Image (cartoon, rainbow, N blue to C red; front, side, top):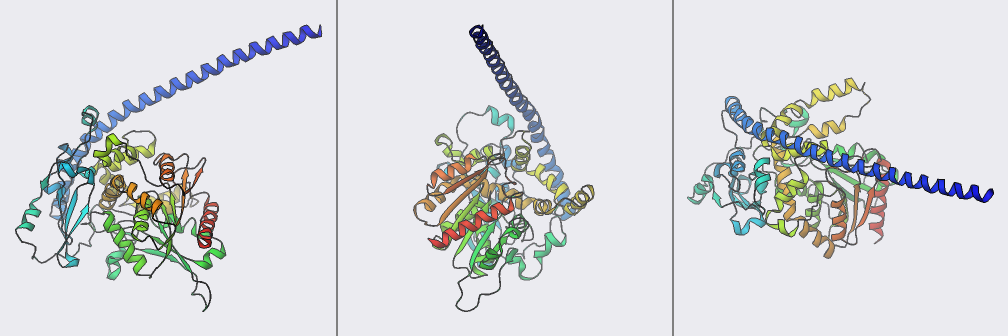
Amino acid sequence: MHIATCVWQEKAAAMGAAAGGRAGECRVSLVALLAAAGRALNCVVSFVVFSFLDVLDMVLCLVYKVVDYAVEAEWKPCYCSAAAREGGGGGGVAGGATGAQGALSFVAPRAAAAAGPKVVRLSSSSANKMQLEDVSDTLYVRASLLSDATRKPGPIAPALTVSPAIAELIRGKIDRAPRPPRQAPCWSDCDCKMCHSWSTGSRASHLYVHVQAPPPPPPGAGEQEAVIFIHGFISSSVFWTETVFPAFSPAARGRYRMFAVDLLGFGRSPKPADSLYTLREHLEMIERSVLQRYRLKSFHVVAHSLGSVLALALAVKYPGAVKSLTLLAPAYFPVPEEEAGAATQYVMRRVAPRRVWPPIAFGASMACWYEHVSRTICLTICRHHRVWNRLFRIFTRNKMRTFLIEAFMCHTHNAAWHTLHNIMCLSASKMGAYLDVVAGQLSCKVALFHGRDDELLPVECTLAVGARVPRARVTVYDNKDHITIVVGQEKLFAAELEAIWRSAAQD
């Protein structure tokens, strides 16, 4: 009787396991089916929404031309006509604005497309010296969703175009008196004290830098070390000063001089209307405002997101000065060989995939693909950031910390638009070389951090950096995204930084 009972129980258990297995397989199949349906729905809705945005951006282009001329008595150059002609760059369009630094441009020929187009800049600050620098072809080659979906495989190479301004330059008309820098904001930009404080006095030539430094050490004491903090896209120094700065230990606050910069065009830093916000401009402003101003001979670097591109460029330019390099969610997308001829386009599609879900991808897509839609967003949000800040405080009963709202909203459209394209998208042609230099020629500590739930820059970006720099220490936080990698775990991250700096000092 006992044996029969055991056999029956074993059979019942086996039948239950089989039924459970079939039920589990059904659940897995149902989940997979729902996921596929969700992806299909996302594609269909995205196609409709972004096709509408393609048309809306053209309409807004005309609207802004009329309003700009009515308010400021001049046309604002844009990249729309070049973007509409897939693969072509318009002279006056790609040429951009002419002003104090006279942005004059031409597009590189097909043979040099992989290296990126160049801009000739006539700089009044250097006795009419001509400067050559990279700009991203994504500024003027942004196909509509329909044409992008139906185009033949292969990279798009812009054709050679010379702007009328270049023709004047060649004819020798560079001895004209330069116009003074435009410091009055555009009508669609905020002119509050915070956003426009840089425009008075000598501050216009330097970035805003938040400095947290201990008193000078007594004679014979150890030298204080410097740390430079570089924020990411659409942010400011408060991303650091309101989070990890208060979380550092007393010992760290007594040993390290910490410099958190507002990048050019963001926060309280200058926001020149005639700038193209290229890598050279951003890097020169960091050098002038931090390295030269505070006479830094060596330093640690901590950078987030887009700021990691600038951090790597700084490390490559000053290889003997960097003690440690800490990158959070670095913006690195290895470009497949078949996409090498259109690397910037590949990065733009990865950063901004033109999908309505997830929301962060939708926001990035509008900011990256649509020049005038993104300007409308800045007009609605950035120009009225004080109103939004008050509303958030009212509705949350002053319980919500609004420093991130201020950081996200204190910039101009011109700064955000050009920085996104000329730093993030153009990083495709630079990041690989930078990482090779860090791996082969620098001996500094390299630490990488990423949130596994980051939907803007996936964790594969950091893993790819770690593969390129084998000595780098890679840390992936579960249940953290692009922002909560710092916000919400400030003390943990501050302790991580202190450990990195101590380890670098011991080497």
